[in-house]
Image 1 (tube, rainbow, N blue to C red):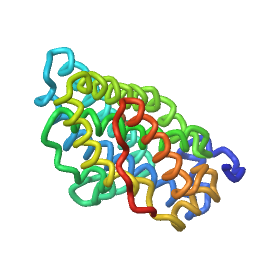
Image 2: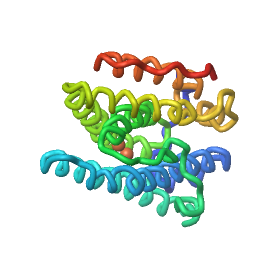
Image 3: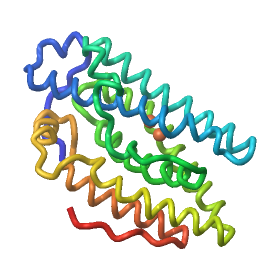
Length: 234
Ligand SMILES: [Fe+2]
Ligand SMILES: [Fe+2]
């Protein structure tokens, strides 16, 4: 549950808040700005070349466009907040480990959208009711697009699974990519997360989100008749 905290309606109102609250907002906004950009650069834009049909290419272009737009939205808020350039630059601020996966083919991209964007949905869900209204508003506009990306991943993975060879490729991609996902939710017992919950910026602990995600990801994978890999318990 979110700890009740008053609404902070504007960037101007934010200046009246404690330093700890402002820094928490800066961390969340900068992290989204960096990771939306880096994901678009290493996954979505290169995937346009892998898309097998004009229809798939069109939808992949749309996804790449939306992911860049997510960056643009978070970056605009970062600029309003006066966050220094280097905190939103993936060349300076290291992106999350889920983007360290070397994308080489179309089935991998479909699996990444199906599972990594599901993980992103959980993160954005937590921001939908957060105390800082400008961040809440970005979460509300972004959410339907992240849902579309995850559904795209599921639909195209399911399409690939119609042949034995395709099913094998999707399973291989799942086995290779799933180990990258649990860390996306951050460390268990995280101090940052504790601060976010204190100020009503996040609802759940990292470890609670991780468990929820792994259950949801497992059921999506199994709905395709595929196996969810065993992971070391975190
Ligand atoms: Fe996104
Ligand atoms: Fe997305």
